[in-house]
Length: 364
Image (cartoon, rainbow, N blue to C red; front, side, top):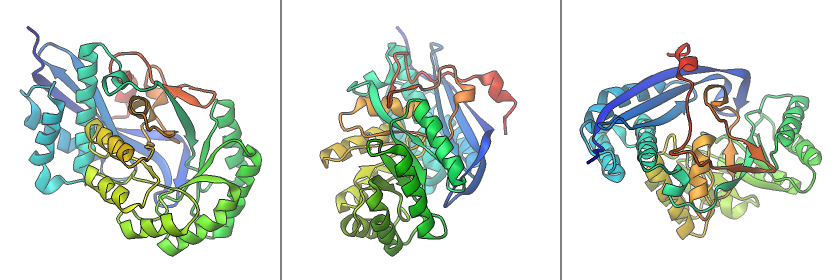
């Protein structure tokens, strides 16, 4: 008889330099990101891999939480009981960990647990989670606020050549007319048929966001992402009611309960959970079903190699964000975009196979 007892949990921390410095209205220039990986092994020798990332400080704390707190909490437990283990982590760290770095650490472990389970069953993750449709519409998520207009348009041309049929750009420059001019130029370059999404990264007050939404709407913008701080639920409701553009938000939510509050209040049109920081696959799927119950689509933020499986699992999938930076240099089979779609693979688990030797030189 096989056993799913967790026998080993290992965590690592890497610093990944970016080939081009990226930029948005909140984080400024982004020359690198930090990657925290988790590798699990059960008593039969089956393995699972999970990961999360940070922009700016915090990854060392996430790494320490996995290695020092979550590992001892889970060793010897039944790895197949993923929901029970998620609850064990949640309540084990509840006093100091309701969100923040705790949610990042839990996410990496939870992703590894689901990968382990799917690999033991010999099935791809998207099928295990529901198996709706392996093809998911995808957009290219630019992190390009400080790019010159020429560089922005060149990036867009490159993304169209790569197979994308939807584009997101950053807004939130010091003067609104700059954003409007850049969005107008992008719309002209894309033509009328390619969706254009914009992302303010929480830059504005509510009144500023409403004014910006009204100014940008004439250029047929698909959604306005993170128009203001995630904590302001009433502010999001005002923006949704008083401004013309649909609102996407949620990448900075760390718990299911934050999504419940925003969705119930009517402050979001496109809930946007990030599996790497909202506690993992277990709560991400609950957010997706919560959105479905409110007749809303669900979208994603970052870690596109994982999110393609989650969006492929549910009937209310919207766009997959293919992030402005990823792990293409360090994984065996990077995500491919064909005529605007990404496809969840048929390899067991999530299928993300790291080049551990290549990463070793970047260990933090």
